[in-house]
Amino acid sequence: MSDNREKGGLRRSGVWQIGSVTQNDRDIDALVGDWLPMREAAKALNVSPNRIKQLIRDHKLLGVKRQGEVSIPAAFIVEGEVVKGLPGTLTVLADCGFSAEEALRWLFTPDDTLPGAPIEAIMASRGTEVRRRAQAMAL
Image (cartoon, rainbow, N blue to C red; front, side, top):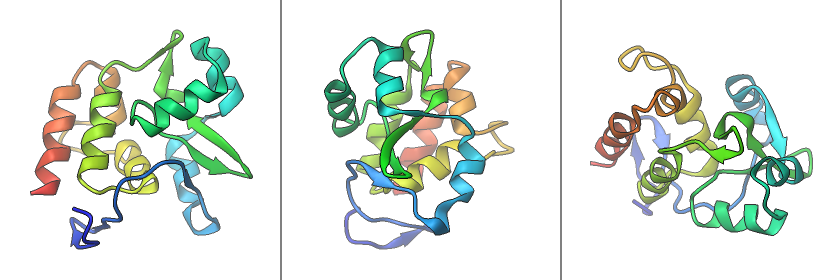
């Protein structure tokens, strides 16, 4: 959906690479909580910072510029691995036209029907349900 139509209250803005959190999007910080700067994320995954950039381009991770440097939500990396189910969900969100900021907001906003935020459901091995909901938003 790269035609910038409104759907479900979110503006669709095409496929994302590395987004940025603007002054108006500081509420994302409150939703996400802990962030890992790119170098710390690379260290946590035992890869190079360039590999982190590639993972972001491939929708395996999502990173945004915060205070001048690329950061990744700490919840995306557990025990030295990208959370199982996250890459597929990020691909669906990108294919649905979510910007990086919209994807973050959606992943971390609590949903009473899950219950909890989509990222919590993914971490609890309920990624299929989360991806189904993400795909339904694109219809």
